[in-house]
Length: 433
Image (cartoon, rainbow, N blue to C red; front, side, top):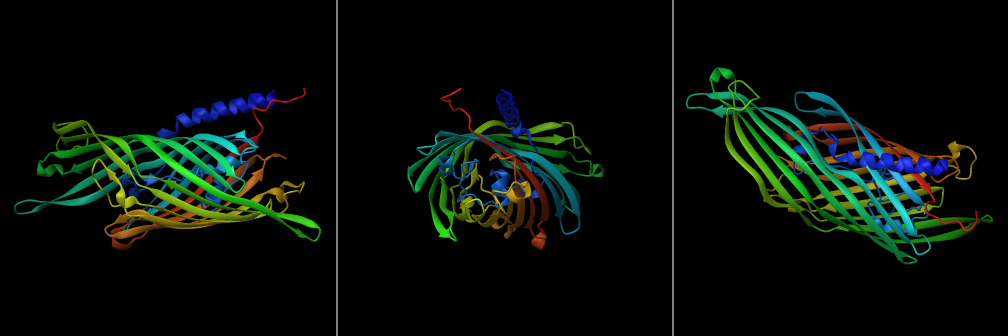
């Protein structure tokens, strides 16, 4: 009775958190000015710690949303939630600043519809992209006999949120397939102000540009998997391998743009002098490009696992209401390794899973012809909760993005993330009381 009440309360809390996902301020990066913002990793804390490897990640006791074929492995009802704290040092050619923020990373539910036949169902929510920048730059305004030194302020906020429903099934002992239907929606707002010193007796200007985006995104996943054992010194040792792939076709989201250009009073960044141009509810299309993921894992059961992924997205195909941006095709490489000293130990320290990972990404950003690449190292712990399959997942990441070359921005991040996974048998009818 107490257990059931706790489970129900936990579900209510997760649903309440999911409703607040879209209101989060996830990034403060100047690079989020490009496209629809900075992409947010939507995998769980386990795969994050493993260098964001996920295509070969297949377990009965956690939700791997990033390959829906893994749902066919469910043996328990799995409920997950995670959060991230980020501390960043953002450096330019002449200055640097520190920023920090935190957010709810994901909320996932996974249910085995038929463990015997390998059929599973999952649903959940996570942030998809985030915009959050405040950039100040100087600009020269030429006049007949002189030029005016003015200031441009660029401010952006918002982002997209993703809700998903997924289904996975085992077609054969060695083959599983699955699909996610993701509903993506949100708003991205960009404001640009031109501020001219009041001594020139000229009006300032304010430009507001907002996009409302919504639509469906489909993920198609497959996993080839098998187990085998070796008899060694009278002990049978079990191994398993998984080869996974995921494909997301190019999708056209519905987009709606509101544009407002106003003049501001002399020497002021607030108030309204005149409306110069206004356009509301201009409909169009936002093209979300195709992406693919490929990976594998090889593991000794309850001891160690090695994983690797490669992922790519055709971001050069991205457009927002007919407008392209400074985006290029992305390609990333990921490695992960985990180790459990003694899964049968009575001491909890022996049953902790230690995780290590790394990734290199040729990101989708290119500014002034210079690519903005990413290098990251991750580490984490999977701490058992009693003698159950539930775990508290803790992790940390050091990440570097960008360069100081060609006037770009260099960012260094230290992130701490936490996730909790409850794995238990729900919705079972017992034959005996």
